[in-house]
Every structure is written in C-alpha cells, then in structure tokens.
Length: 395
Image (cartoon, rainbow, N blue to C red; front, side, top):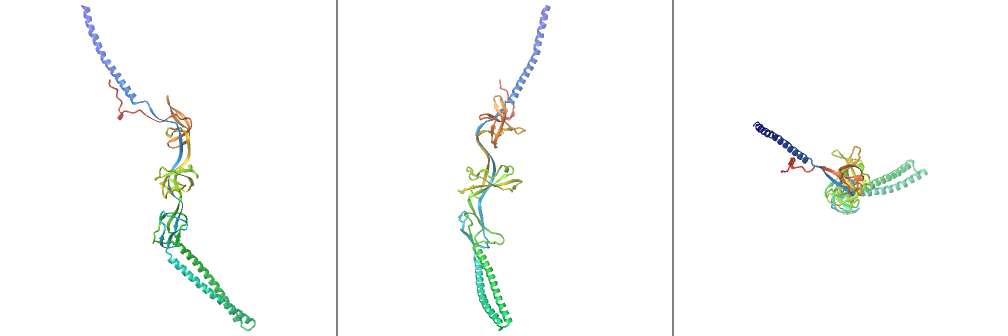
C-alpha cells in the first residue's frame, strides 16, 4: 500500500515539470522567428551591387573649343559725301549689285555750278587784265627806250628818263600780280570743279548695297562730319568673328582649322581657318573674351551680315582608336589615369594611358583593348517603393 502511494505522488510531479518547459520552448521559438525575420529584412535591404558598364570600342574622336560668333563681310565700304547739300537722288536699292564706277546718288549741284561759273568769269577777267597789262608794258618799254636815248644824246632830262624807267617797272610788276591772281583763281576753280564732281557719288568697288542710311531730300552737312549715304560690301567672302574665353585662347593659333554652322542651317558646315587673333580683349559681364577672325568663302551667298554661328575650333582628331566614356576614367593624386574593369571576380582597378579627350569619350593608348568592359557607375538593386523593408513570404 505504501508503494502505491509513492507512485501516485510521482506522476503529478513529472506533469508539473513538463508544464514548466512549455514557456521556455515558446520563448525559444519566438527568438528564432525574430532572428529569421531580422536576417531576411537585413539581407533584403542590402542587395548585391549592380554596375553600369560600357565596352571599349573603336571609333573616331575630335577635341574642339566652341564659341559663338557673328559674321560681317570681309571687305566693305561706307560710302559718304564730301560736300554739303540736299540729297537729290539715290539710285540703287538695298540688295542691288553694283560695279565700281556706277552712279549711286547725287547731291543738288546748283551751288557748286554757280561757284564754278563765278570762278571762270573771274579767270576770264584776270586774263583780260593781263592782256591789257602786257600791252601797257610794251608801250612803257618803248617810252623808256626813247627817254634813255634822249638822255644819252643830252636832248632829254634825267628826270624824264627815270620816270619812264619806273613806269615800265610798275607795268611789269602789275603783270606778275595778275599772273598770281590768275593762278589763285585757277586753283579755286579746280577746287570748285572737284566739289561739283563730288555731288555725284560713284561706287568705289564692286559689291552689294547692304544698307542705306540717308533719304532722298535730306540735307547732308559735310562740314561737321562725313555723312554716310550707304554701305557696299563684297559678300563673296565673309569674316566670322568668334569670341573665345581667355581660358581657351592659348589653345588656338593662326591657321587652326575651324568649322561652324548657323542657326538657320544647323545641318550644314562651313569650313575655314583662323586668320587673326585680336590682342585686345572684350569684357562682357566680367568675362574676358578675345575676338578670333575666320575668313570663309560665300559663293552661294547663304551667309549674311550679322548672322549668328556656333564655331568649333579643331584642336585634334583621331580615327578608329579605342574609346571609353570619359566619366569612367579616374585620376589619382599624381594625375595617373585608371579605370575599373569588370571581371568575373568583380571590378578591378587598372592603370591606363590616354590621348585625346572630350566631354563624352576619351582615347585609350595603353592598358585596355577593344571589348574590355569598364565600370561607368554603380547603383543598388531596386528598393521596395516608399523604402519599406521587404516582408517575408506567407507560409
């Protein structure tokens, strides 16, 4: 009976011990589930890196300096007037093609015609006076000879002989004065004839009338300034004036090849070379710019005055060479260039040597071969929208 009682007491004790184990098991299961959830969210938030890559390929490269330019005819003349007066006529219109010597305009010649007529009348009067003075001199010479003969024969007085000689000399001096007046009047006549000729304005060169600044009937005053009537330009050759920044001007020299396009014809290229670099800069909003002049043939007259052009100065070019994106190149403190080459083990740093370079691509002269894959950039795997951690799948 005693043994039966001990067995009965042992069974409730074991049941009690099993009941105390359940909270521990539940706690361990919760910890394991939390750890799994943390591991899943941590690994989901840090995906393996993805790389933006590009392959080394053969291609052409060109390095340039760009600038904005305006164009003007290389040769042009502002045709003005050398005399004052009312502008009577202007023959050509803007755009007319003229030849050297063509009549362009005329100023009222009335005043200058009157001056020429007065000069000629004065000249005729002086010449008549000269003829009269010549006759008087001849008479005075004869009287002087008689007076001197009478004095030599002691038939006349010395006073009469001296008076005859003085009269002859006065007549000779009068002739000299008249000749001087004639020369002066002749010079005045020639000047007035020149001014009369200036009332007709002729083309000084072959070209095209590109602008007319005066109007028929207006009065032009040549005494204060030289009034401009019109401009003639030779449009067969245009000069492109490009404004180049001071940081780029050392790269450009006389003879540097150039090409450019205009706003109206962006797909057409005109070519030329640098003719001149002006030494005096232009300062615009504290930016120092230098004028670079380029002459360009314009046989089809598609280039016009004051057109805007985008100019490219060719500093260097190469064809069929290995190229990589410029943004893939890294530079160390010593200036050495390198890239990250993508391999099965991941990106590897590799030193390279470069040649020509522009904003998009760079020539590789050593260190890479066509077909190599270089890392341009890297980006993380796509994140869950709104940045929330990825939830584990439902079981």
